[in-house]
Length: 173
Image 1 (cartoon, helix red, strand yellow):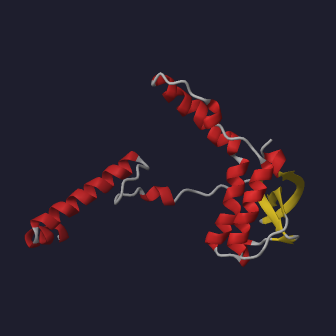
Image 2 (cartoon, rainbow, N blue to C red):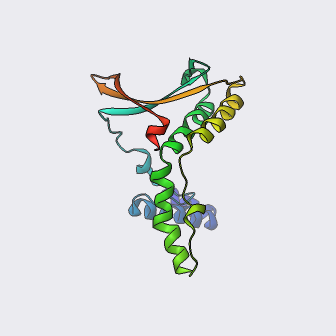
């Protein structure tokens, strides 16, 4: 048996291997606790659900539609991720204030000031920042940016664009 040979070879190595195996079993028992170097293997093997509708950002810079295939994955993430953050400002950051910050501040007997924690949607400021961001990523001067959020319908293994299109100010009013 392998462990018997390891025990005879080096007792410290044997102990480390047994502890590692016990840690891995514990993590699997807890279903999803992640603690390096122990990982729950099931976290990488969940079924990907297919939805009827998908939302996709369409970005036009200087009248040209940007395509993910023209950029590295890292660059494309830097182009698209800020749009999702902007879209979810009210949903994510303001819930954090209501659920956590306000409660903790009151527990510490401090009066929370909402204006320091709650974000608002300022499309003009965002677009100004986003243009500079695109210029850094693309290396081109950006005169104008138009962003739309289009819904696609998935049927018969094909994504078809629908007529549902939102502008940034509709996504984060």
